[in-house]
Image (cartoon, rainbow, N blue to C red):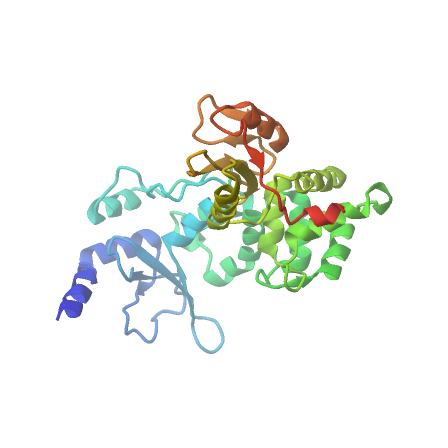
Length: 362
């Protein structure tokens, strides 16, 4: 009984017919798709609206291209996906409501019918801004069919994930339309050399070894688009490519940089060392939650673990968050020097030994 009661409480309240009609008219949708609906009427259906599974005010936009051969292809394009674009290294806006200050289904309906749309942020890629503007066009006939959206979406995904022009050319060659594909290192290196026009005579072998260390899967030496794009966010821009590779090498060469270590593992390493020596240690690492960012983790004299986010995005400065006075420097090395001089940060603390990148330089 208790489980049944909880399930009933989770069910969204019914949506009245008037609200449905207003929303369909505003979005240029062809009809309302119920959970048990098996087909869609109308040969030119552009969009079908369905209630969100958990929250009635949130709607999943199910776009159906009924002219596709055979069965209908149904896709959910939800507000969650819109927010995902905002969180992926191009401005974290995903904690903001779509319409700040507008609450309640009737007010939201009136707001949308008046021509209002969620904000399109200036720093977003042009391809994404153009596609969103078309999908939200006031004239329903100007809005693209989902088949047309799919044709544009491969480019949008690459533009969103990779902030660098050279990096995008590499992504389009290796991953366009196959974003989850794993690429062997030899294939990647061939494309990397082609698109960057890198003169191998101008760099040492260690540069490519360091690049491989941060983009290759440690188990099979394959490379995913996500991992490559993260590297670009951490160390871009990629032009000139020699400077890009030097930034990677210089960072991995630091004995205080431990790379792909999550917060729990970092705390465990510091605690283990502190318990046997009573000495305070620190390390730097990649932020595994926010592309482009880094993290500083250290242990105080009483054994307290402290994590500090280092805000950084493509081709920007390095800023230590939540610190007074603010610490903001052009390079990670300069920020580290300032932290070393600060008594409440790294003064009198030692570098935690054992960086996995040390072997690259031996």
